[in-house]
Image (cartoon, rainbow, N blue to C red; front, side, top):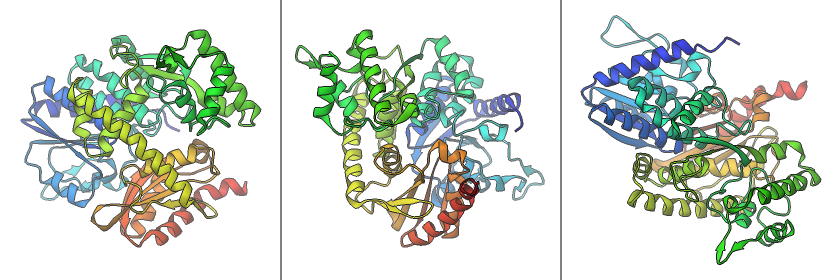
Length: 482
């Protein structure tokens, strides 16, 4: 494997930064998830600070109508953040810039530009870690890539490193080894030097800041806690058995309210629970690792912990309020934050309902895949999150990837796929598999080796499943034969 071309990466970031700074006006186009909203806020803040007029638009996917809109934009530059690489060959806007981390569209190499004698270079204003030997699925997110451009626009933009890491955590880039790795650690060092992020080793269950401890354990899915997950009474008894009070006066205690000695006692008991139940050391390792604190935010709020912050942004984007998340990232602690918190509460409720829906309908299992169809009962913008939660729940076999469907707008079907790091080590590449399978039925798709998405026509689900299973069988079959 070739060494990463770090120098080339920074040179490309600087070239894009100079182009954007010289532009008369810019349209920023971003994805709606946490990484996309974080990316948009970094792009907008850096342009705003430089005095460059710009607007921000959020989209679910870069489908043909959206691509046409991008190509027809009247602004001098169009900056696509956390998307664009998978459709790079279709970009025709003369001022197109892409800062993305999804697997690139390799068909864009050497594309001839209509009416010109020069080649449209694959690397021209296209910043993607994959192009420079950096793994975009684990080492650098879309917001991290966008941050690198922003830093080249002005070194003072280093304070935006905190939002870049919120985006990385929202994209689960700390999931593989329970800590940020690769290029993300370079950004982490800068954020710590700026005083905008602090890395700590602690329990990694979601809700350390805002969930009462019994709820923290009750809703744990990664890892699944035998006897505690989905069992609130069991959680309360377990906590009391460790000599830890559930309440302080009339207020329910959250994890951050516990003393250090109580946290150590609870963590030790949870480790023994996992080991005694046969979950093994791997489950223990998933429970303990780095967490990322934003020290300038108020303790006990959704913004103090990067994982909770990213979930807040996800809730905004998934329900059509990405602009609200953008304003929160840019510092609005008034109405925008209030709206975002409400959206997050609704998001949690919708996820819980969707999980129950999947349990009720059950998963269909083939030789190489398992799948469910949410129809119109599961919102298409959260079906991928649901697929990931189901796979990590411990309640289904985790040896095969999950394929999830949900009806989408325009008579289409949203497809989301989720795997595990172990599957990737065995050869799984969902980005390639979903793209090829979607194209075989007239759709489009892409993403990462461990998580990817597509859009296909209604009624094409069975043909899609047949094709993606054939591809995954080829990818993972060699490992099984060995």
